[in-house]
Length: 241
Image (cartoon, rainbow, N blue to C red; front, side, top):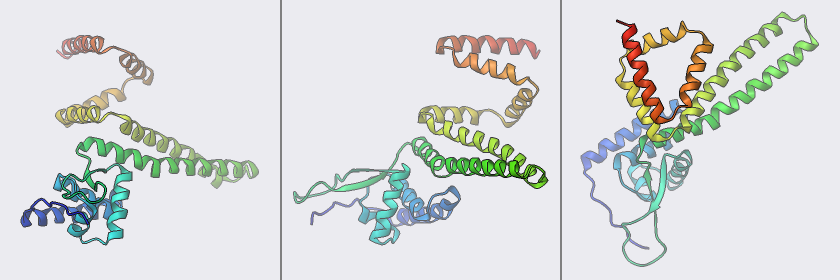
């Protein structure tokens, strides 16, 4: 069996990493991720280096089967990736396999969003669409049933909401990590009061005007967008004086 050169780890740092992994695992269920997967992900993030299945297993006190399944699922979620084991010594056997957390946090966040949409969001839409169709068919057979009528009205309204939410989630997952990071970073620099005022302002504008403006802006080239932004900023500053 080929040996692996292990990197020394501080006992204190290792204990903190394990505590983080345990806490991350407890929160995993709230995110729709199994605790074992979340523990493995947090531990690999905190180690910041590739680790073999055995190293992960021994650090977290998992069985071989549990560690293998957790790593495979974490890979399927896009949280970790396989890499070549660079610390092997000797020449026996093929190159080993190690796992490391996806270093770009925005990248794995986008993958989690996309995976949750596929596993949760899309199936909910299908279920609601079928339920609405069944209710509509039942109402056609019993047009005088007020309970069925109320049920159909609620389903139709709720389905619109779920579709909009599912679409918004899907758009997030389609953004490049750098685009998502910059968008949220800029949003983080805007005071809450400014955002709330902007939302209130948009609420008072006709839908057609807002949609027309968004469509026009989306078709501008970067150079034209910069010019338009400068022009709009000047006009707005003049109006608020």
